[in-house]
Image (tube, rainbow, N blue to C red; front, side, top):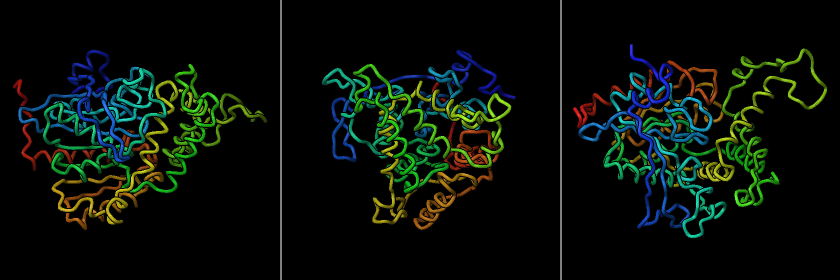
Length: 397
């Protein structure tokens, strides 16, 4: 049996994954044309790759991260020390097998882990962009990813896969660049962001902007940090990632380090302590302004709206092969959102399969140990590799 990521650490893990961490400057000579109409550049992109690119450069798998993710998909995070957010899927002998595939994961445009975002220095002033950073969309994020693949010399990715906001990026890949990806796995996502989700995002943004430490977005220049507001934003969002069943199973009404309620506003209940911990640890690794920009990009995501209300038009004549995955207890991106995508793909005569994974873990199930989900992804990739006639021989072989 092959060793998994969990049995490896440090340089051993990096070597076994054939991991490379890098940064590249793009759009230096020719600015990026954004959906807003602005032209922006240069853009530094932080990314990691795992595995080896085959001789034909046809085995690349683009992994797209969610709202609070980054390019540390398989290697430990440098700030928290925690395992990569998809280390359960990516690695030698795992679902996305780095002995077979060349995995590319980049930090999105607007992020705060090395890719140009609000806290990055504006070359014109030397100061952080802050709210001078342009408003971006999910499509803008994908434009940067496509440019990264150009830089890597990859004409077509074998697959694009991602969950939540990552799934939105996958849909954009398949819609806008159908010739650049062979198959697509949008997971626990939607084609049109709902009013409820916009509302949750707005609560989070208002919590950040109400923090006196936000300083009108100029907190970096003031040497301050709206960590309380950002923590509340994270707490509110994190509730949406879980199901009532999961919360009840894990916490119920259990008290936190006490035998009876305290008749005050300390964390009487374990669930309160858990949310406070989620908030406090999040502020260590995430920038508040990035949170504003990335949630706004999700708010604007509306593929049917871009095609006169017809989602199927976004995939007309697409050659891309799809596997759409939802989770039964996900109320943030419920199964009906995935079914709408499947109906549109069927209307466009696309090649599509659909799986609703039975899970009581809520939206976060795509990040957790869900054997049915893992088997679905592994089986789809294997079938597509056979259909593509994919060779796993590298130039070194």
